[in-house]
Length: 287
Image (cartoon, rainbow, N blue to C red; front, side, top):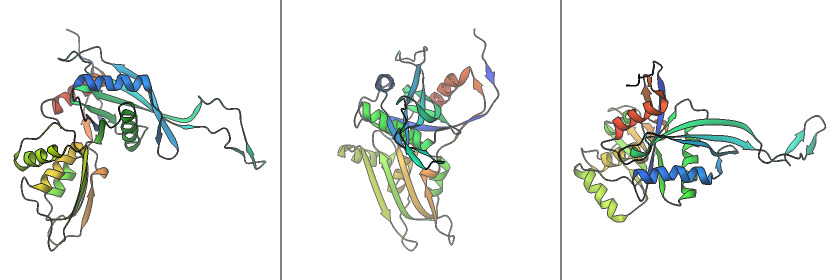
């Protein structure tokens, strides 16, 4: 039996849920990355940067469906040089340079670890490429290779959502939810899910407004709870709450609270560790 390699070093990760709107199976998620690698679309990122794919590695170990356990992808962020936009500060003259269009500047690189069987991706919390840019790249690039097919959502810290649900009063709720998850089973949550499913939406948005005198009703297994719970892995929610009676109003925006996964040690490398961690967490029930 091969000896386990253990590195006692804590690492922290953000999680991204990538969901296909059709063909929600492991094979589709694997082919998604194969197509991404072969087509390698160029994506515009914030502050004048661009993003593309550098490399993809597929696990040689296969799951019960004979698909790779994990996929490791390296993405790049960089600035494309405009040869007509150079300037000489000393002479105060605009310049044109004969510039190789394949040479870019200010390159940053991030490693992504994707587990196809649970369609969940992990990226370092300290990644050189921001979480916002990573999500934007994935959403744009994946839907470029298969138009209107994938939803890409950051997993939200549960504590932030529980603060909304446990608030003394919820005065306003705004949510933007992707609706490609396979289903839910509990009470109103299931009924709400079923009613939406018959509409066949890709995403749905909801805005509900109340006041301190007449706050939104947050009864157990009700509409408010269903929307907030759906947002954990499937979108965003923003709420104006009064945490306790008499306290000041507070705004909780899920975009400010991405889930932070803490892994205390690395066993047999990052790929194996993240595979085992995410399979354990999301292998049985996953939206």
